[in-house]
Image 1 (spheres, rainbow, N blue to C red):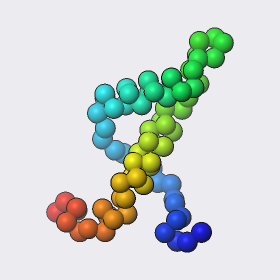
Image 2 (image 1 turned 90 degrees about the vertical axis):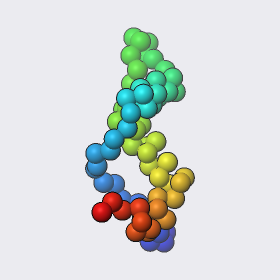
Image 3 (image 1 turned 120 degrees about the vertical axis):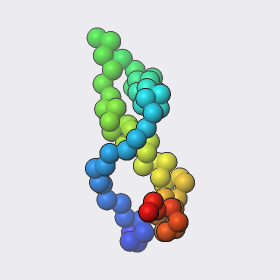
Image 4 (image 1 turned 180 degrees about the vertical axis):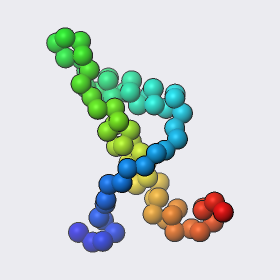
Amino acid sequence: MSATDEKISINVTIDISPITLQTIVENAKKIVGADEKGVYRVDTAEKVNEMVSAFLTKYDFDEYAKNIDNYKR
């Protein structure tokens, strides 16, 4: 694995809309389905993590971070 393929986990606070969070929760529940008691067993925080990480990879956050114009002053 090259250095550019390595990933580290960090804990951050991000701002997303309530509608986005609701959508992630609803879709995650659809994917896992309810158990025999009608309970959905899904870690929605981890699902948000997966979604944001996939988005950052898909839209090349590495390149975005390299551009100094993307930093607030």
